[in-house]
Length: 555
Ligand SMILES: Nc1nc2c(c(=O)[nH]1)N[C@H]1C(S)=C(S)[C@@H](COP(=O)(O)O)O[C@H]1N2
Ligand SMILES: [Mo]
Image (tube, rainbow, N blue to C red; front, side, top):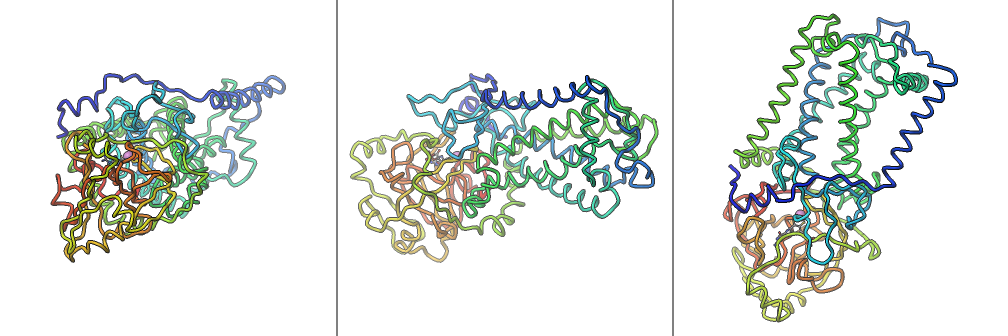
């Protein structure tokens, strides 16, 4: 059970729960103008020449009722499961979105450069305002699990469901293409576009076009809509999702550029969700308006009659989907650890085999360094750290020990003498923001060569002077194997200067194939151990222990 002590209450139930949506005016005007233009054109055509002709029978194969008709069992199953998974993806996605309630088309995420935000707050510039401060509240009726900063569990639902969504999608497309059913939704002639426009003119001028019996075929607009949902929205959601993975983006920096960049991919991911939702609303409205009982029999029973049974079973199906939200909510609050482990049992082995093998190789230029870099985490409040700050860390000694042949205590000057490398990299926070910065320091490999871990040491733990969100010291762990990968640094510098206090002075970790929370700031000591299970609650880090984040966040 996630406890509701004072610390959790202030995070999950903040005093300020206002919800506001702000959209950049130029974007609003652009969208409104595009819609107005389409409607205007439809009305002009209607005014000048009247309603265009729309065939009362399926238009694509007007003379061929022998073609694909009816809805085989696999269509009906995929239809239901897709609904189940998409709704859960939307609900958990909204919880994830609210953890950084701003969307951008640039990778710097400078406050004010967003095109849409779901918060009334403008980022204050006169004090530190962290990404965690910026997270917003979302009602648990809307988001899974909802409230504020529940991104760990929201990701569990998102990533469990995405497996179901992809499996359903693959089954559907394979079956579609190996049966006649593809002819229903794949336009085969450009004439369909003209026919779709004619149908649109009907709707836009408040006329219902003649309704083909969907059992035998669709009208052209329907066909294009279904085609787009299956062959555009689905793949786009998956591809833009992958374009947010630090392991992928930092190994193939060109991949997210297909979508206009990493943040643009995140924006498109959101827009795809809106498109799915918009489609759902129109789809359901038309199913209800054009012969509800018969339509429900088509997709639930696979029969073409007006028996009410399909409708009632359909309601049961919708009930099951709603029930899945209630169950998900219950599990989220009462069995969060079980959920975290359930996801881990699937993704951990899979990531070891796939994403975790991608080694960071980014080459950003100085010009690409972000002018603003969101800070995150709680500044240390410990007196010894404050004294170190005052003395410019002159007396700081980094203790490196545990299962090593040669434990050491190093001053900053000694660390500097071990070597110096610089990388300009893109940082990905789990909450959604990114930023490019130049980090200077020593490769962790240099440190490992110095201390010589014993053979039984498999994991290296980084302990911070700073506190975690719900109290106690912040720490995180890495497999030794991972910190030997390229671009993994113990950083002393950011953008050519000693690490500023808020960015982790005197030392922080950089691991570019993972999410930001693995990169401990304000490092006090480093310890080599056999397993992360020996530390804290045993999940591999403070966020993993307290907030149910993943041990291996390559995505
Ligand atoms: N000690 C400590 N380190 C931390 C955190 C923290 O809360 N405490 N937050 C992490 C998270 S969630 C992120 S995204 C990065 C943020 O680094 P930045 O402040 O340089 O942007 O630091 C990570 N390191
Ligand atoms: Mo983060």
